Image 1 (cartoon, rainbow, N blue to C red):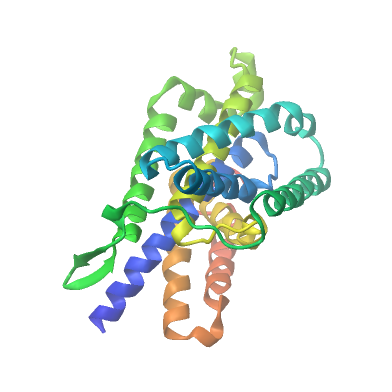
Image 2: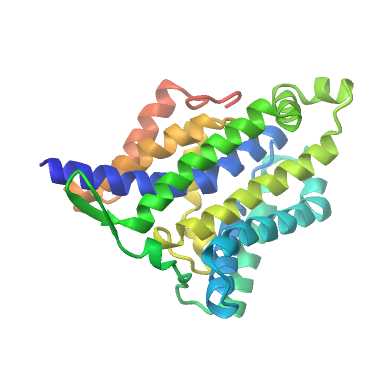
Length: 288
């Protein structure tokens, strides 16, 4: 019984950290820009492909490939924000959804053309390919790394959003964009930087989580609902809300599939409905 509980908790935490890393940027951009970016998962897939190409085709170390994925996808996100996303700020939700869905399917077609339809796996360092022993039980070392990485990214975002001038401006714009502009905050530049940050973190999450959520051309479509659930339950514009939401969803999903696999994802959606009925704006949402 204890072994089963520890196994569920460990793998649930690993799954939760991947969901958190990919989803937290979506929560920030939606909370700040009020833009429904359903193509967010495509940026995560792009990060995964960068890590795959860097480690397998270019022979770069995994530890170099991860920051490369962040930088590459962040730059791509900044370009997309400047060229197209910016034109849809203030547009109705239907236009935003149609635009981002179109962007998602264009990305799927591009990934399929460039990398083929099959799953891709990055080259994992030898130090993360073995097992670690926790509580007398062996667990995959790479998934322990995923858990540590998720907590480290939470701490880094807390420092960035809570302790820097840029974070102060982001929080001010989330609370009241008009007031932020009135006191001199350049919200256009802030939007570009925030969108780049959100997509860069998604790309990093795609690379780190490639062992948990497989990198395929349809990655952004396949896991879109899970990313949206994490944001909705955690709350728009929050750093800690998506972390708590990802923990709930990750552990509940693994526990449900481990104990009663016939129910599939029933438990995830049951928990989501219960939470949103009690807290419509999510755990830490500044708006619903």
